Length: 374
Image (cartoon, rainbow, N blue to C red; front, top):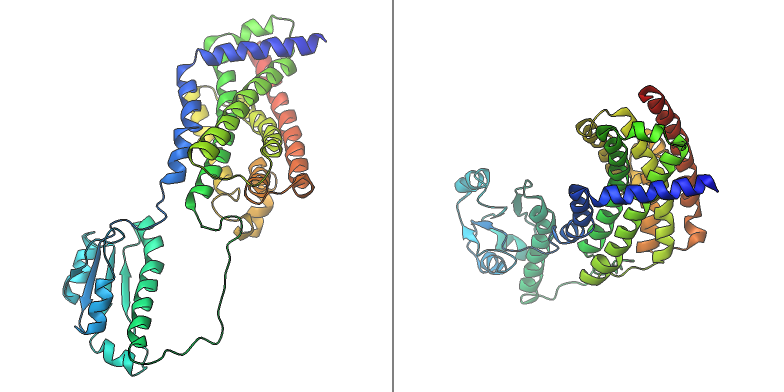
């Protein structure tokens, strides 16, 4: 009874300390509002005013027809240049795409010789290059097919490929970007808030005050974990319902409650990790550097940017000990595919086990730190 009361009141103290920390409050608001919106809308889903140049050495009705197919708003009006100018313009960053149509192109097409067209792409403009290459290929092929239809009946393909995209039928980048940014920010804020809460005690000299109180290291650590977990969980719930589902109108397929239950287990693990890192660091700048070393690999290798199965085997095996790998798998299954508990229970079990290990290690490290201070 006394232990629960101590943990409760120490947690309330953490709320008051956080309320006086303006920078942390701004970070929480930004991470679960503007950062989510930006991640969902930053990468364009369609081309917009992409600069394209055309080297037309054929000067035929077909080549002119292809050139006329590139028009605003997807593309800027094409610039007709010579082959000599093409490399220099791309080196100067003037064109994202340069289409080279060789001489005799229409003649070879009508003769069935399958001539080649060269498309040069400035891949440093990643968003336009990624979307535009396939778009240009489809435009060119469509114009050739329409041109040939006026000369002869085009043979029907022997096999028609019909594809359907599940879980994201319109292939909207916003659906992926918003949810993954929410997942990443839950991890980041859990580590930052708990670590900062402990370092705030050390920098303000209030650790010594706690040592003379009738409280144990377990109670101090548990209070920081539950209070900061509540803050992150409430902010994540607001972001998921108001920003993701409301402002961005992104549908959530599965149970929000099931996702939040998994997020709570994930917070248990990551807040314990934040305590562990804070016991290693001696100041907030050191803590910030430690976060860079730990958080970036956790987010990059967790399966959020690329499927975990595509990682090297030894990296995939190593990441099994990271809570983010299981949290991302659980969140994607629930929020994207509408999975129930019968599907994601292995991730729940893994998060609980990893959280228990991290809590035990952090508590041992925390006790050692308090002994050194005392």
